[in-house]
Image 1 (tube, rainbow over the protein chains, first blue to last red):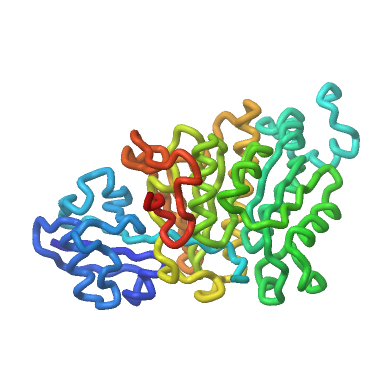
Image 2: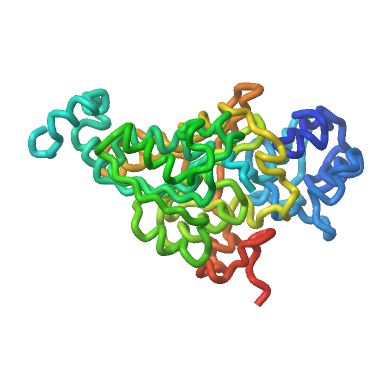
Length: 98
Length: 278
């Protein structure tokens, strides 16, 4: 199946682009796709999933614009044509003093 | 209009507000009677303070413990070259005094901490978070959510901005991000850089949210739709605004069904802002 993976803030720099279109095995879950991405981009290792394979609490993953926390989390199934967005919180207020 | 106690100078100053049905003299009076706390007098705080002061928000608290540096002036437009070295709250308060004599400024030259946040919030109707670090952001979320104080959140990174608002009974920031990233994982503006005009756009949206909340609280602007329950992602490079729904998380440690945080004293506001080990 074909997925659009979208990256925000720090993840853009790691992946080197805002989004990528990529083939994944049919029926892959969110966690499986994130694990594949961690393997494909070594700098993403341990950035998306905790050691137990759950989504890290410091980021949000959206399937077609909705937080997968309110679906089945990492077990949320994906379908051909879905969009998966990966975004972290950012804190900047542009003081830049510290 | 006479019973709303706006003097002739105010009727002139705020005439473009007053002629609109969604504001009118009642809305302008509500703005003049409002007490708003702005956290941070930096890139976000600058346009927030400027527009809220121009709009006639009667009492503005400004909290910041920094001094103006020359590298701030590329985006922190409330400060000028001659202000380098001065406390930001002092410089911002001076700007407001010159802009609008209707506005009283409370200059809080302090860092917002778990020890002073509740006392700070107690005096205000609405909070605008323009702080610059995760510790303060999670602290503000927790304190405002627990106290039922509505607030708007804006944050920036290079060419990107995130903006949302929170009111009682709606999802909070921890519904979206339960914990802060470990220190160093997300670079701040001094490390990552930031487009100078970016906080202007984001701060203006936060100021807009503040004005709308004040009008709605006064029973005006019935069609206003604030950012409660959704977050805007602004990409200045692509010039796109995306709207992402924020849903309540039943497992949220602050506003969930069985919250673990009942006081800011329950949390260590360092590193990931997780609940204290004990």
